[in-house]
Length: 291
Ligand code: HXC
Ligand code: NAP
Image (cartoon, rainbow, N blue to C red; front, side, top):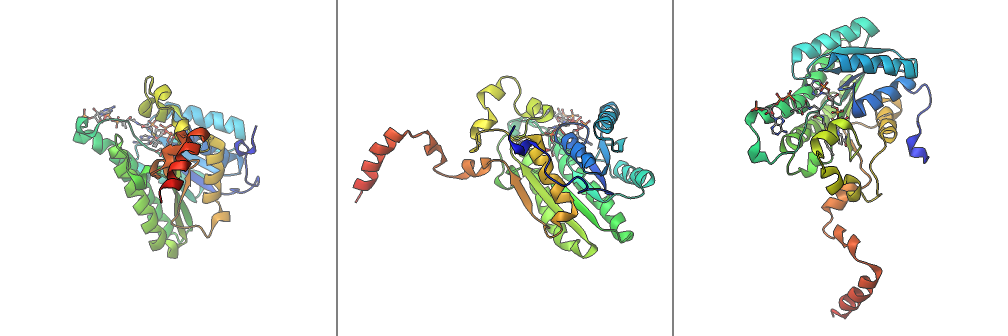
């Protein structure tokens, strides 16, 4: 296997850290949390489904030997988020790092959406990120404790995207918050960064964004210049670095990890990829002849 599927950081890179990962019971949150545990961290995972996070927690503990606290909560409720933080402090003594990973999303023509559909996605992605960041940030500042926040966004946070408008709107807000707070809270020793993944297969995303035979018709790997989807470990490697003290001088940035996907979509002539060498011979004659 190529080594981008292998763990990258030194074994003790997150030793002694406690990390709260929202939506940590499934998909990318679960993969990241597993790697954080392997690097010596304690992890708190949250989601609405207690059975899912409890099962995940036991499986992750068995796999890594680390300590996981699973707490059911809805990120849309500030009260529930505060309760999670209080329980996390009671259990582990402190929380050092927050990964805002929980999300809600599905494809739909915007005119088919109700205002409640918008409310739901924006509530999870934007208000959920605000709730966790504000509640934990207040505590860090009050206790004069350093902290690190990592927000999982997407590349359409800055390009926008048709058919996922609530998500694009919310992720854009999260990116603006990332950059704003990175400056405002640096004086409290709180760093805030973001990661924008391209396509990384997960059940949650694939069921809602590529339902039915859409995954065959619109294979996301086809749009990626490096020719493949992302591997969870390579995203986990990046996220572990960004929440670790090794990235102490990175603040307010958003790191894209998409194999060049969004730039290919943006480049006006990217579809000339389809032109064969023989066609280029002919086209060259025309372009050279255009005097
Ligand atoms: C139109 C829909 C809909 C759909 C729900 N609604 N699904 N409208 N098309 N497919 C409407 C409902 O009718 C309702 O409006 C409103 O949205 C809220 O629906 P609920 O089911 O009550 O919402 P809730 O239980 O809060 O569930 C949230 C959810 C759901 C977002 C709708 O999909 C979910 O739980 N998602 C969590 C996991 C997830 O989405 N993971 C994927 C992340 S992937 P009315 O008016 O009828 O009351 C991702 C990748 C980004 O973010 C980038 C990829 C490259
Ligand atoms: P996922 O497995 O569906 O993860 C989303 C998680 O959020 C679930 O565990 C879900 O659990 C939780 N969640 C949803 N609503 C919640 C709420 N109200 N309160 C608490 N938790 C809630 O999907 P994923 O692909 O791993 O996505 C993880 C992150 O990566 C998201 O931020 C997503 O936008 C981002 N991302 C993914 C991709 C990709 O290709 N996969 C690409 C770009 C960005 P419950 O339903 O149990 O609450």
